[in-house]
Amino acid sequence: MRSYLILSMCILFLIQYFANIEWLGYLVVIMAILSFLASVSISKGFPRIIGITMMVTGMILELNKGAGFEGISQGLLLILPLICLVTLAPLLSLPLKLGGYFDAVDALLRNLLHHPRQLFAGITTSLFILSPILSLGSVRIISEFLTDIKLPSTMSVKGYMIGFSTAIMWSPYFASVSLVLYYLEMPVGKYILYGIGLSFLSLIVGNILFAFWERNHPLSKSHDPKIPLNKKHRFKLFQLGFFVIVLMTTSLTIEYVTKWSMIVIVSLISLSLPIIWGTIANGWHRLSTLLKVYRDQSVMLMNNEIMLFTSAGLLAHAIQGTGFANALSEFLTILANRSFLLFAIAVMVIVLSITYVGIHQIAVVAALAMQLNPEELGITTLALAMLLLLAWSISSTLSPFSGLNLMVSRIVGISGVQTGLRANGLHLSILTFLGISIIMFIK
Image: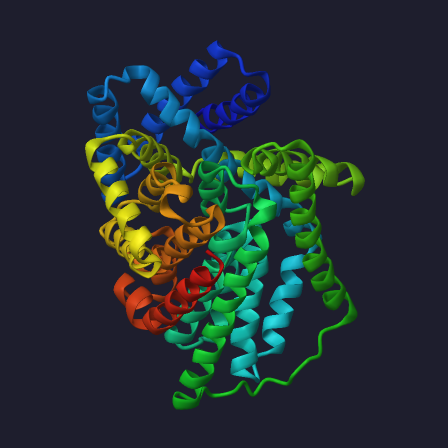
């Protein structure tokens, strides 16, 4: 029943986006609140506590500002596109699962076992390609491929974190990019090449650092006979790369032509792609099975995402215009006008400090994106977007409470602090230095 509530909410929101019917907007808001309450009732532990805290705080702030239910509605309507994106994006993976593409990635990684550095490059590159489509599921899939290989925990942690965190900085199919650009009112087409540049920089730095690490910690090479990739697997890998390129190109073209929000475009593509694939490949029978799994399992397992995104989005909207937010904005504006470097460092410290104790990136980054004005800061919208997404990516790796850190630490069997700070601290420090230097150059 809860999955039907969430999916109906997403469909009605997309209708509301185009129809702009007032009563339908209020209905979607009520469904969002019900979805939040349903998720809270199932969630447990720290995510439940922090989700309730952020929601209650956001409502109190809206009431204190005198906005009342109207303010709460506006806050929820601003975050609903992101909830739709997170809910519907997993549909993109269904054609890939049925097309045998994951088997080709598995074969590629096993083919690289004799060369640790190439294997590490294969892991990070595979995640760079798969993460925009599969989100955290990409980490789970790659880890399943490597289960019986018994890689050193440090190598696994570095590979998973570096590979996945790149997508946070460039993919319009990710909550981070869609949210920041949505609030900054910046087209994805004007940003994406710079985001990909930052992501490639992260991959290059990560692979260079791993090469030095592997030199000091030589890995025993596989004694299994090396089997070249067959034509079928090579063709599947080519198709996978082509699929991602077509997906991104289609999204950017639709945005350029229609001027619709990229979050809405991605949601519509996520809904349409399985239908198109089922029609062209005549695979409705196989697809229907996966759709049932998606409805009954995937959507049902999104408790924490829906709860945290809803509450963090409302809190970010509620903070906007408060005395604290205005004072912080004024401080950062003064800092930016004196020194962009000090401003960038301050933003990084604010984001990393707040997210490290468990507050979701949406709450702090979205609040900054809504509160800060690039013109008053004396910088371009592009520079501010790059800085916020760089901070989001780094905080997702560092924070022991981020979804990425929690998953990787659980897979590898080490603590969140070891996963983030100890295993990837040097990589993140270098990436921060180089990233801010590049942003200073283009600001």
